[in-house]
Image (tube, rainbow, N blue to C red; front, side, top):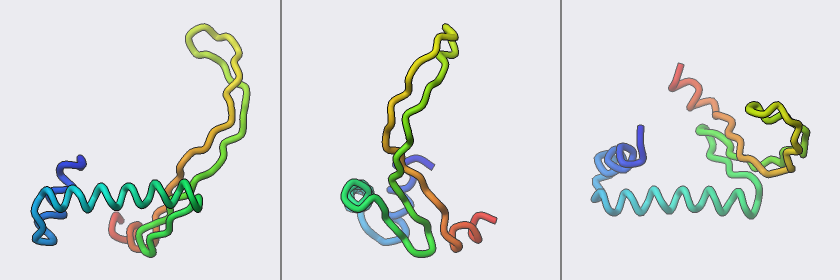
Length: 90
């Protein structure tokens, strides 16, 4: 499902216009992004948990040249599905 499909779905389910549904979806995504930046974690009960985790620096190998290289530390986003989402998919 693309973002456009999701906006259309939200518009149909809520009776909002597509423009309003698009703004609502953008607001939710911005809220999740800000929550991860500020708190490092966003919990949506029953749906899942978005969390920001630090990935440690490590050494790797360039697959094309086979030369060793250093991969710096960085923050990554993880998602753990909640029970209601797991049950809905299974």
